[in-house]
Structure formats: C-alpha cells, structure tokens
Length: 110
Image 1 (cartoon, rainbow, N blue to C red):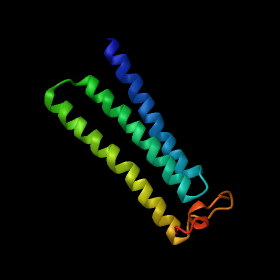
Image 2: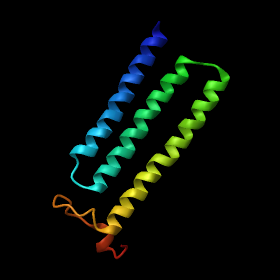
Image 3: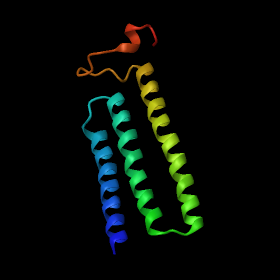
C-alpha cells in the first residue's frame, strides 16, 4: 500500500518535470536557455519515473534493465543538451535580446 503511494507520487512528480521541460521549450526566449532547461528537467523527470518503476517491480531483470537505461539517460541527456546549445551558439541562432552576457565571445572562445 505505502509502496504504491510512493510510486504514484514519483510518477506524478516525474511527469510534472517532463511537462515543465515541454513548457520550457515553448516559453523560453532562446535556444541556449531552452536546451539547458529541457536537459535538466527531462533528465530529473525520467529519473523519478524510472525509480518509481524500480520500486514497483523488484525482479532482478527489471532492475538491471532500468538501471542501465537510467545510466544511459543521465549520461546522454545533458551531453546532447550541451551539444545542441553549442551548435546553436556557433551558428548564430542563439542571439536573443534578453541574453545580455556573452562570455565565450568576451573570452575569445567562439
């Protein structure tokens, strides 16, 4: 009973974070902030959902598969967000009127 409540709460929190990441894509002003918000919120949201799945099903095979998926997701999501933001910055599409500080160009690392 308690385990099902914990699983439900984790799934709701995870789904809320994934929905927040989707809202970030729509509302944030430039590709740099979008990539940052989406990679962080989606990574944490899916982490909570996978932990809920692990709590719900304790079979050895399920735990191994879910832990491997979790590790792969936590490694690739932030790196892909960084790669997309870097590509956006280098292509010039990342310029937004609200972004006032441009540290890479000030340091000559463009």
